[in-house]
View 1 (cartoon, one colour):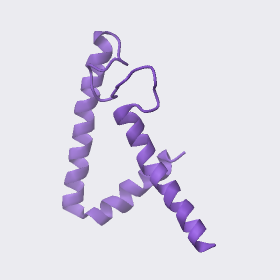
View 2 (view 1 turned 90 degrees about the vertical axis):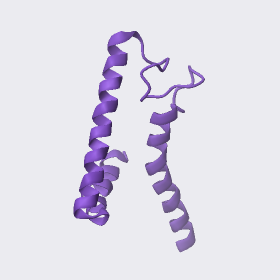
View 3 (view 1 turned 180 degrees about the horizontal axis):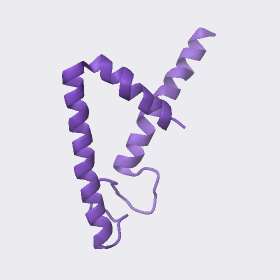
Length: 95
């Protein structure tokens, strides 16, 4: 019984961690285009110059957040960052 529970818990954890990231990065959820990426301003899912500019600004902001998280991990330790940010992030975004 415990093997079954741990197996399904592992599948649930993998789906929680990987599915959203894969969906956003390679747009496996959208079948209208052969290839689409939510981070690429020239992706076919974005129409018009304004949307492309907003995507580029969003990319810069995402890079700033990831840089800040990297700095926090170096300053306070990666275990602290995992407990204070990464685990709560997955709990909030799981559903």
